[in-house]
Image (cartoon, rainbow, N blue to C red):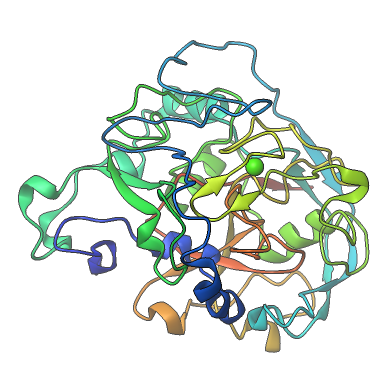
Length: 376
Ligand SMILES: [Ca+2]
């Protein structure tokens, strides 16, 4: 397997592949010039691998730093919700999402879906039962990383690091760093004492990791159509899964990003990083965090043109992946956006939009939830 995409510089750096869902569209790139150079010097460090995670001290905002290493045993129970079969309009008319066109009718059989993202506590039970080692924890094969010094081949994963000041939005490596030792157990890497919180969604999971968990749990990963159908909650096309306004009645409906990306996260919605599951209102189906918090793996291969010839009943995606932006990589769909999404950057938290990522890569804002067929 060619893993050269995981090398961004002479030193081992974080793969962009799992972040592509948060790369700006052309519209956002055009705005980058306006962003750069404004509000200089007001950056808030969200985390700094190597120096340790340092969450901003913000009044009213959950602050979690190195001192927070306590064990919590009171975990959110795992529950599944039955989604009745039906037909819905899949995709988005939004000009920012050409790969989400055309909007097309899709008919699905009913299925069960996790009411919340898989938590660290749930993933820990899987690891304890099976001894499973995630991709981010495994030794790196030098043959997969030609030209990278052996001492740089350290297991780890990509962690978001707020910039010290406003930057151009055309290069995500300015705010993504490869953090040695970062994994689902230690989301910010070995330079931080922070451990995974039991009720927060598991992160730094590759597609393989998510699939292994789902199989162990007697479940599977959702198709992209199932995911969107569940997220829409039986409602018609609208800009956001919850309605027409990003902040109806002055209330934040999902864990997304406020402030100025990527240097100043005000955490106005209550969280600057991942939030414990079920921290925001559920959708009409009783599902939490279908929007924001962390991206979620789907089982479909990603192709930007798939909607042009998608099956009408129970579509399962194309036979293989193709991404003109990253040809040669195998990509699966990711959905829902994350705590780093806003209308300034990463608009793909909006309804009907699509994300994607390279299958062996995880990051600090990527997790998953599972589904189950009626007969199982
Ligand atoms: Ca937030």
